[in-house]
Image 1 (tube, rainbow, N blue to C red):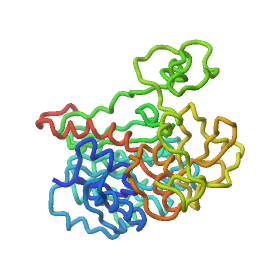
Image 2 (tube, one colour):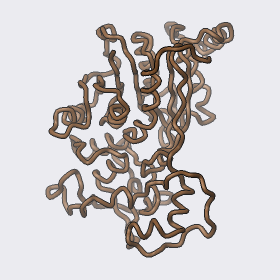
Image 3 (cartoon, helix red, strand yellow):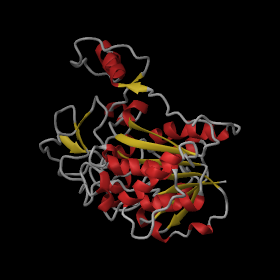
Image 4 (cartoon, helix red, strand yellow):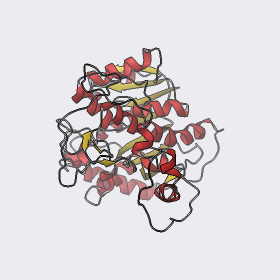
Length: 377
């Protein structure tokens, strides 16, 4: 059976899928530089990916050419239509590619579907469209008619659902997560949606493994500072409650094994050089070393001033190097990125953190491996 990653980007989601047991994966991506990155990391001496790259615009894919049954369809559709920093156009944004996701679902009928997007998708103004997405997943056979508004299609879906409550085509569950709660050195809030064929066992999202409280306890006890050979810094006055989780991973934790950045791109290895011009802007004052990073961003025309920056121990602010942002997205150091700085920034900022992808997809792989049995709908 085939596993497919639609909108594969630089391969963050695919690396996690591979760790969870989904490999090889067919990687569909239209951006030429992202495709160069994917191919490099499939064929290198230290490959981080396993699969084949299909460089194509999603609108041009003929899904009838896929002859094998599809086990997994994973898709991190472009998030700009629903991003807090975007134009807030949702379904009216030409970059909304959820219709293409559903075209693939209807043609391929995968055993399971994994979707990832920004948390803006579930904010009140977009919530009706989010509910529409969930209903389409439950009943993909009820296709929209030609020139039908999504609201009209949604009303037909609601009527169909009310009359077919026990005949769903996919059992759907979703959750908003913070990547830091799964060991990613970054506060990154995302929504994951899982849709399984009804005969599969029930999927449950993994329990969070890391917490803010555990980091505060670690710092208050001094263990954190001893590990980094730093003087104890002021933190919480009262011990946070015990929760039997591991501490959030901090920027200092993540970057501790990297060499000092090069002073120029020409002298650098691993895309690890100092990028000049970092400044502090209101609301964009940089990530702290002893806390998870702020969300790593891609930007439309490059990352705006104040984003993707670090506050050094000296108090000075600088941009994260590209390799540092890749580590904060939990890419392996052996994962190579192709393109100019602008292209690599987009690839890294748009990626699903590899560790988060693995955490979400591992229980999904186990569900698919279990013997088929009757599920509770």
